Image (tube, rainbow, N blue to C red; front, side, top):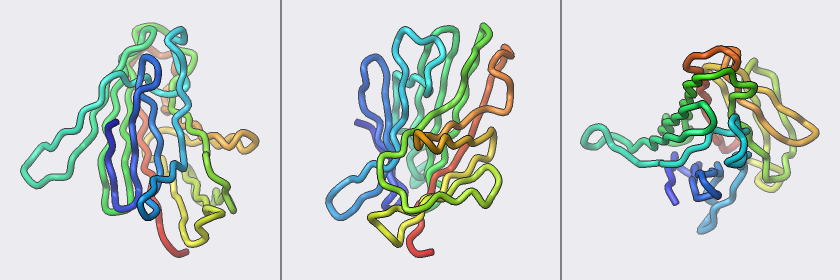
Length: 184
């Protein structure tokens, strides 16, 4: 397993068939509580629900600099890459790209909410906040800086999409941050 933490927030990558899936969660005492889980595809899908990372490494680019997770993967006619970094002690930033050599019908990242949510807040564009039912003083924020955020309420799933059309042959990119805040 490969992981990266920003305070009590953490992302954990683990083997899932031919790729790596990941969860984003919080450290509660000695336990890790996964909040969001990547929705993965299968090796038969050329354009899976989430980037099919097959290798993930942790790197430090300068002495004393915080570590960064770097991932790569292939699927269908797409070459995928991911960089995950800490923004501060409360936020993780995900920078995702896919270079496709043929038309794609889907590109993006999908997550499933794994915990009971007290309330969802869509008051800011391209952002969502949600309060955890069990941990009343914790608020999770997901904010997209490049791309679009869609929330499918019935399924409690998020979709993070590039701005560019998947059918265009080019490098597509989407970036988002996830943070956890105590108190409201």
